[in-house]
Length: 131
Image (cartoon, rainbow, N blue to C red; front, side):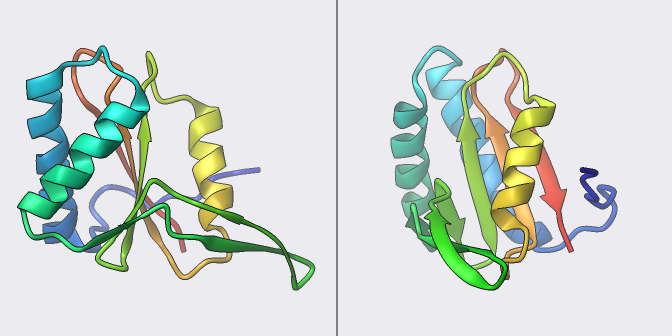
């Protein structure tokens, strides 16, 4: 399996992703990197709301196999019906995390994922475009 994420110069939803990343940076500066994912999830919901950025938490995305529904995936956030945001708290963003997100969005209408890692001293953000 090869992930075909485009290079960073191919920006889609540039303004929206900058706002989302700005929210995450604000949270990381305030809370640091020592909490569980649920804490960062709740903080990001508050920050997005305070910034007037529309979002849905854990919106169901259907998964199909051979054209048939077999289950669903619930990303942490779908922001403005455009961007999937996944929160992690880990020592680094691993290849497995990137592959997992790829399979979540494969075949869906969503093409942009922000994988945000609060678990490091410096906030980790991967902006992944699939298409």
